[in-house]
Structures are given as structure tokens and as C-alpha cells.
Image 1 (cartoon, rainbow, N blue to C red):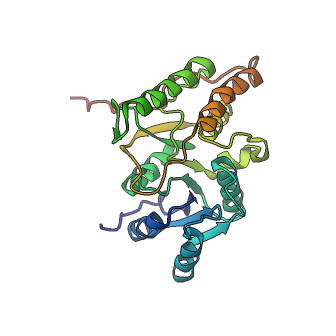
Image 2: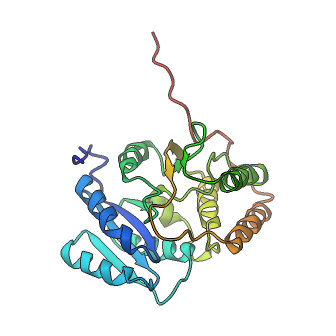
Image 3: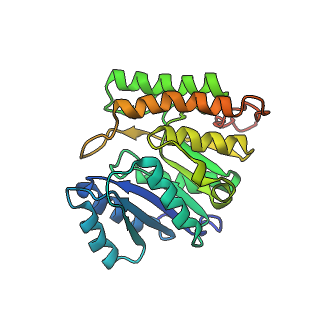
Length: 263
């Protein structure tokens, strides 16, 4: 894969935060693909003491490549706390754009270029599976229905006009994370994605969605479970009650289809 050319905006330093738990088979090809293609991007892996040796392998990769960074945690502490740890690490340094990304190749690295382009006129860019039909590969029908119903549920209760409220492939401008009280983010499963996007929207930042194709993980085991689903159900109501009497931003869709060129 050829290296992607960069504009002045894209030359700003970017960090991709990637939580890991038993992702030994994925971290080497993922890091090689990203770093080969995007010269101004660095990676921060946050490993939760993976039993399969992911953390030890990441240390080897980081020793060879200065653009790879690794944080180790003592156990499986959850997705939300991993990202908050990564955000704080990034804000202590000079990164301008901070990504969230999965380690299992369900998020295709080729879309990083689209994120870096879209962030030029946005503060948060969301990778959406549902802006153009349904762009999901190898999901079962029940899982797809849960995902679609979850986004509808979020929109109906909170009013937030995201087409994919639970997606985990996204890019923040630094100033968004600086403005949020990260210590007050309480969600720790996939509802973390809802909460972060909701607070960004309520703060009046510019949010854009770009279409992506989501692939079922290439290896390892899915982290989805019933506790994560229950948490997401209750978090939405907590957000609604918390901002019940606060004026909400316009419900303009985050994704605007390209307009045909005028003749």
C-alpha cells in the first residue's frame, strides 16, 4: 500500500488509541499497515494484561518503532477507562488529532485518510456504518438489529442526530477533549461511545459523520456481552435526565450527503 500524501492540515500530529485484550494475532499487521501508510500518525496501545501475550509482543514492537507506544494495565478494566487513560496521555503531549480504533481490523485503516480530510472542518468525526444503507460485513441478523435499534433508541431519547451512535471509529480534535471533564465520564462499555459523542454535541462542537464499511473481527473473540448492553440502555436515560432542562443543539444530521455539482 502506498504512503498517503498529506495536506498542511493532515501534517498535524495524530495519535490512534487502540485498547487491546487478547489481540496478539492482530497488533503486528495492524501497526505495520498504519505506520507504513500514514507518516504523521503514531499509535498508543493500551493492554489490559492480555493472557495471550499481547502486551509482551507490543513491548517488542515499541522497542523497534518509536511511533508505537504502550501502556500496561493490571487487568481487564474496560473500554471506557482505557480510552480515558489514552486521552489523558495524549493531552499531556502535543497531538492535535486523537483517534479511537479497534485492534481487530473491523476498522479498516484505509479510512484514516478520510478522517484526516473530514476533520479539517470538524471537531469530531464519526465513522458510520449506516449513512449509506447498511455497511456491515459478516454480522448476524440479530446483532445488526441490536445495533440499528440502539442508534434509534439513542436518537429518540436524547435527540442527538447520529446515524451510528455506538460506533467506535472516531477522531477528536484536541480542543474537544481538553474541554470535557474526562474524570466524569462514567460509561465503561460501548455506551462510552454514546456518552462521549453526546457531550461533544451538547458542548456545541462541530460533528461530522463519514461512511465506513465495518468488518466482523478478523481474529480473537468479541468483547460484547449482556452487561455492556444493559449499561448502554441505562446510560441513555441518565444523559437525558442530566440535561432535561438544558437547551440542546440543532438536530441537523451529522452526515450530509454530497451535493451534485451545479451545471
